[in-house]
Length: 630
Image (tube, rainbow, N blue to C red; front, top):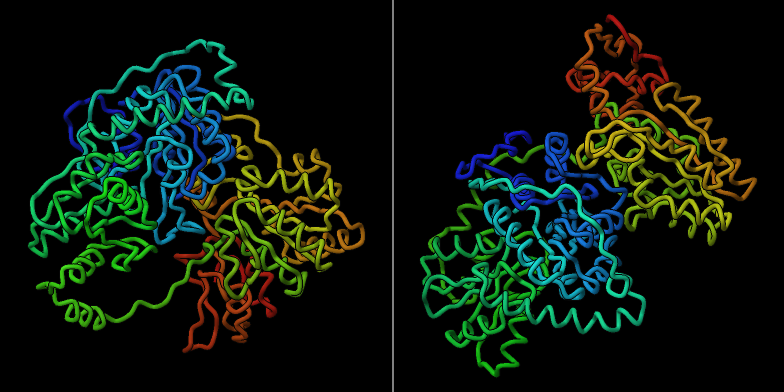
């Protein structure tokens, strides 16, 4: 595994096996980027994780984990306007948060290179939707590049900055999960020097897009995209290879699958690979269409390139069969695989392959199925104790708006405390809407990082409009879901500088919440249940919002701290002479470290999984779970 510090080597020509995310972090150094701002989100997480580790060892470099994506693009955009190269990173849904400034930024443009890197997530491995962010480039009128592997991820990033400075526009750099998390050989280049500081030159009638300014900037933007079209026609990022009567147009990770499909099917075809996909090279595509009677477009998710190809064929009056998603040969959902491309080409060409899919499927069916293991909260996760208390205090009868984070896993039995979710920060605002029209008890939950990212406006709305909602803020002292990144409540910056953290309870009081309490979920389950009941009763009586901050470090942080400690551990165990096999610890609390032994008819604790939080002790009605020597 590559360490972040390995990426600091200034050894041009050396080859390393890198994730695309690691290659991008290296590309930041080779491009001379001065400022990077991002909000962490899988599948882009490793970019920030590597940069924050390298940041203290770099001169004239600034990195931050911004409060949210809107903040990140505004910080990075301002730096590029001031005159230094900058990078903003987010995942697909994160670009939705940054869409407002992204569209305005295209109007005003930039003075130095700026790249907006968005990592889309086909198949939704860690996202709430299959955002196809390519349409943002089309809507914003910004150039867009799409790498196919780690090597291209680095080399294209360097070219993206050159294009950005040539056109004075931010450039969108789109990756997908399979690119971000795949490894391939990457050749290192020279690390470029970064400017120390620049002086901001005022030009308000360019950079302040009041209507009269925006009125003039929009034609300018369209003119820049005309220049971008010329770049698209001439850049080596767009190229064709191979010969044959069949034509294939592809981009991104689907290019790899198309190449593999042609090789395994022994098909002669000309392949047009697009690395710069907005604007598409219209002349190059039209000439490509003229050379073929059948052209297949291979791309994941929406028919973005396919629609552009059809548009060009219609405008140029080219008679050609353009086949892809519109005829049902390729799906508009989920990640592609080589098999998907092979089977689509087989249907299009009415040609059988030598691959015996039935035999392969039969062999797969012979493999014993793995036992089902749905995503679970970690052993020792403080969220489990909090959700157990919420459900116990409300008897499962309240409405439970949830949010984006590890804690969304509370949707599953037996906790079942996630009833509605739109996006980050929506738990508080959806709670407001539900409480107003139903009159039911509403207990919303939101994580600490999500609270800072997008929960604050909801609290303001609840206070100002007197929404009778209960909000439980799950403060586990980190951004746990995407890899333990810091946030404003942790006291650590992206530059690894220790600062005074913002206290969530104080923030809520400052926003006008009258009822704010702090609890420690591992201290006493009885007290925790009582605190939730009291909060619900107060809100029911006062018809105003209340906040309970459930503060306990993430189990991963606790385990790491414990591993550094030399104190002897006192583990928890089940006294089998007291356990009556009621299974309450399993059916109501469901900690992954606990299991049922059918031979003895008793519950047991797996010491290799137990995180020693002790919250299960109060769950056992027999008092059979104890700490210390057996």
